[in-house]
Amino acid sequence: MTDHFAPPPARGCSQTPVLKQRGQHEVFCGLTGIIWLHRKMQDAFFLVVGSRTCAHLLQSAAGVMIFAEPRFATAILEETDLAGMADAQAELDRVVSELLKRRPDIRQLFLVGSCPSEVIKLDLANAAERMSAQFAPRVRVLNFSGSGIETTFTQGEDACLAAMVPVLPDTDARELLIVGALPDVVEEQAVGLLNAMGIGPVRVLPAPARNAEYGIGPNTVYALTQPFLTETHEALQRRGARHIAAPFPFGEEGTTAWLQAIATEFGVDAATFARVTDAPRARARKAVAQAAETLRDKSVFFFPDSQLELPLARFLTRECGMQAVEIGAPFIHRAVMAPELDLLAEGPVIAEGQDVDLQLDRCRAAAPDLTVCGLGLANPLEAEGLTTKWAIELVFTPVHFYEQAGDLAGLFSRPIRRRSLLKMEAA
Ligand code: SF4
Picture 1 (cartoon, rainbow, N blue to C red):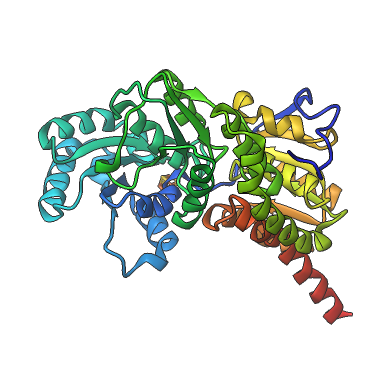
Picture 2: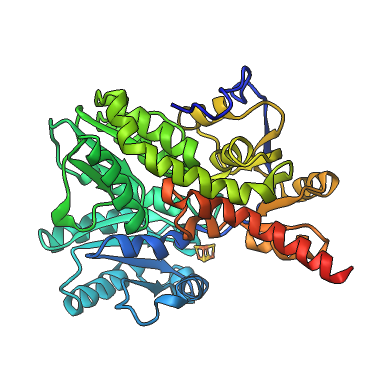
């Protein structure tokens, strides 16, 4: 299958001791996920119960969507609410009633918790249950937290999808579920490849609308497309669904291994698999090879941020010839990450959690050719002469599967090329 790649390392990183860090961390909060989630669910509305800070974060992150019919908003908790003087639940009921009266297109409403709503212990689960009973069957009301306390920005999507799993109906049908909010064009490519192998029907979580939903049960098998969907993974297991463990579909190797794991589950023969994947594999290989010319033998250092760090390090080291110095991830879910850790050759420090000052010291000492980090760290590190890549771009850019493999490699090669051009101009 992965014929032209190096065989899996004799000793991968599965047994590498993990450096656990618990200190100050610098990440965006889970509200960020609303920006891509609201595009995937056409009948959903995200009501953040938060402060003016939360509203500003959403507005600036979603600036490009200004002309779209808004499918998210912030119910602002005023100082009186925060001081516990007003009945925030009654106020929330009023806001939601008005919203649903004004917007009959809303079929599912998410009450999204924030730092302020958690601080005053506003019970959104209870509110969602009460409102679901009131507005059923037209509107389903669910809740999840996007709070920035002890979380990272991709956990918003995980919390949202995990909230949807328990309300899906039961089924005994043998079905494949692809889990993760991918850009439509990427999702179509993935489903197209699976259908071409004769696998179907293929369901997707999140479904584009409530009327496109399906059931979950003991014959559901699912594959994750994003490494940060661990809470959703647990929720699906609780429904009796079975996980198809695989590396994540980043790069030619990751995509092939991901597809192969599903093909094996559905008994697809080797000739069919090759017929469907040979051409896109060749395109991916060619596109990655171009960017890899810049990346080969360069070192890379990951700060914990997007939770994509381990699969990306695997892609950059195995397909682009980079050397990983440290791979920091906010959380490492052993069962979900095992296939990635098996492929990553021993050598880099694997760190979980963050103590930003200590990690900055290690990064400066290592002086890597490329540092992948959050926006807050990128500017100061650039000023110190390090070349950086913003981790958040990896979530906002289509990077999964074969046709995007070259773009994924390009995201890392561009900052290195830009830095060397600047150096040449300065010389
Ligand atoms: Fe800030 Fe918390 Fe609101 Fe996120 S949820 S914008 S971290 S206050």
